[in-house]
Image (tube, rainbow, N blue to C red; front, side, top):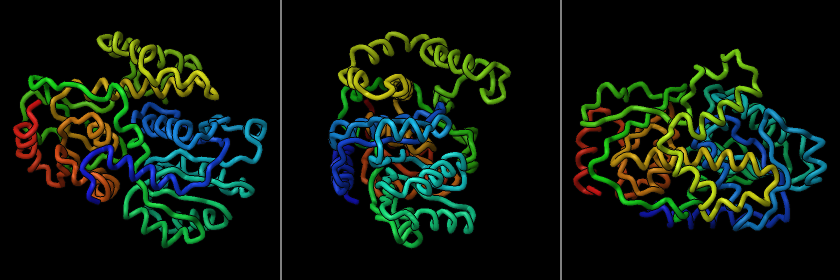
Length: 363
């Protein structure tokens, strides 16, 4: 697509989402109960779009871990259900997919909308099982965020309305506090994921660039080791984690974070929302991601939302593949014309492209 700026991609997103019927209220499910900044960016963008543009009241939210049928029924009755977008319509991230299928199977008496997703199944039988569940719903709309996912959905989810759309985070293009003046003396970041989506052909050890720092989202830092393996009780662990995330992990970020929470023009939006504390938690994760990437003059990333956030921030960056087609097809579908980004498949080309970007966009 011939899109040269985040704002133009935002226009496409709004046009695609505008195909939906207007709803007075809804439930928004699959809250990201994790530390992945990208998932929280998607959630916030969905909340902002539904409340500000669609003028839809979100009267119930839940993660897969705390969903309550009775609570949702009490709050929204038979209002439509929106399922959060992302890269988990797959058999790779099974918890999200299982929850999604349970909701679609159970609530056939109301519209269900799946916000923009990438689709990937390693098992044909799992894909066919999902297709059977989706196709049995009489009013299911599925937004897909790349051409591969779109074509796959058209083939298998034939009883659904399938719409090709950019990622929800492009709704935040032009948002206050996302513009800044880059310092040409700042270091370079290799923003490298270390989970099951890591493409091992792009090892940071093979990159020879000065002042190169390698780290994933800082929100993953945790003083007690693996949070899932910690002996600390869950409730206490979450409380400690919240305090850690909001100050102890990155004390230099404290002043900026306080301004973000109290003075940002969007901060007041959460006051009138259902379960505002969850939205504020996501808002805190967004600050963590924005603050982190702003500390670098160039970003090399294998995370899709490292790419999207760098695009919104105007940071020159190199975008690398993940373990399957998600990153590449998203780039080809929406962001290939962004002038300060390069998608690189061959790790040997990273250094030359990094130097070229630094020359073209010095600060």
